[in-house]
Image (tube, rainbow, N blue to C red; front, side, top):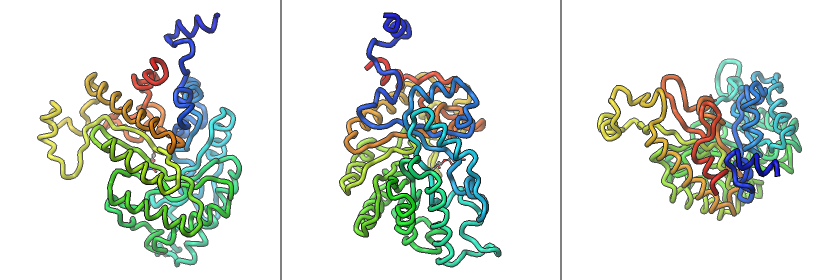
Length: 362
Ligand code: XIL
């Protein structure tokens, strides 16, 4: 009785779900990207929100090669170990991000002592050593890894990364082979952004087909899901997810966030865009420095609700939706020079309307 009264006085229905992980419990795991302060549990209020809402996680930076493998013969496990412990202690499933990526790559990884590209043989050996050492350390604890990240450009061409330059596209199957040898029980993913671009989409289908033809393990494709108010088109996103799943792999939404700011591309006519939004052109880079206007906030919440309803409709193929951060002030997208509002919780950790919609009013 006391519990019931408490639930009612907190504004929750008797059997309404408590957090996002409960609201989507029948559908998929709900994850969060954890930064250093969160992993170190520096703030108890933050920790409570993480515990209440999430049953999966990725580390925002601490498993990237520049962080974990700063020099060829030196690994720094301190924060990465804490990340895995943090998750395990809270019943959160830890995922691994990322093994092979051109960005935040350790400076030594692909060059010799003179700063020139290493030979294909040396790069293969370094990839194998890195993948094997990192995966072995967390064997049986990290459930799945982003093996290769962002290998494809919007138009479908291969990204000119050091890996591609030295090994050609062969570096991708090699990475999957090394990963599977390191931990045969671990799930393996290919992860990329801008998955609504047709060129990238076609190439992803080809890549999954090639890995499967060669008998290599690939469990899912990660759709990063960094979005804006005007991209991607929700129907195309859904169609492309289903086409990838038809290749016989799962889908993970790995890095979801939605910028609330006007999208400014290099070809954008900023003056016209500013006029249509009622923003002074000189304020376009940082249009909402104090707060998000109510009207934009309502549009943002509605669009997020539409996306999450679409994710739920596709829960037969989606295994996990991982939000790229907890509250707006901790988002990689928000800086003092360009304040953004891309996450599910406000700066003060209060949930946005869309979170309340899914956790309270359903
Ligand atoms: C971002 C982190 O959020 C930032 O803290 C860091 O400074 C840069 O990287 N694609 C990815 C992620 O795969 O690893 C990136 O994370 C965001 C884009």
